[in-house]
Image: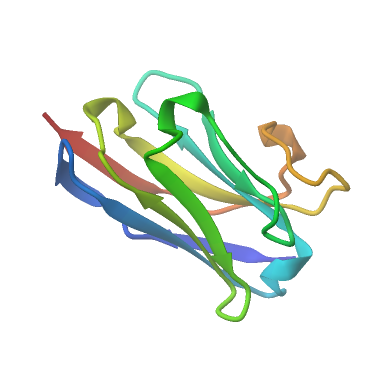
Length: 125
């Protein structure tokens, strides 16, 4: 079992940047493909980005392509989401998640086995 803790959220103006971190404990992160999801007020949880166990396969939701970058540092047992050119519509609680399924990557939240508690990102216009 792995425990996940997100950090790095906050309040930023439109056009600004934030880097979210997802620190894992309990098991090595290299055993999991890792994803970022978000839930905006009044909306359902949404897939944002995913990175495979090897780091060689990455996928993003179209709305963040070219602005967000997912990465992982297994030596530090940490995953990151670099968010640039932030927009007010990026405002949400961001969650990291770990999947031990056989998929290389997956966008489906029910394929993820472990979740962090979330970190709030607020982008002002």
